[in-house]
Length: 134
Image (tube, rainbow, N blue to C red; front, side, top):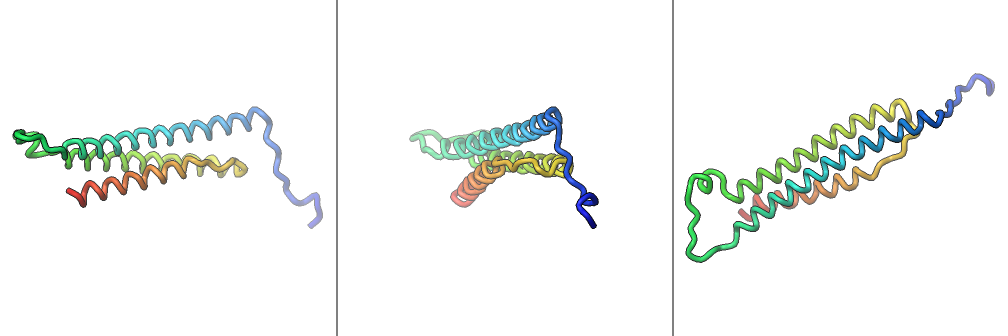
């Protein structure tokens, strides 16, 4: 096999390269919006759980809402919803980037996975604390 038989990569023109970059950045913005939503749900859920742990002297919570869904259950639900939002957003992002990388293998790697993993770790820790410390 001589040198002329080896296929070489065709360089992309500027318009195509920029279109790929815009698509990649749009995917990152989408996953970061999932991270933003998840972190809000996780922190609000934990805040609700902690806020209603404070005892108010002379106040006894009564009523249907407290009996069925108290602050702890609401907090756990919000944390789980935040983790689910994060999980589904990350799955969608990985699918989209994988399909783009098949067409353009030289696409740079993203750091949004690190941020997503850190928020997921925070969510799991807060979920464990909320469930165990009941």
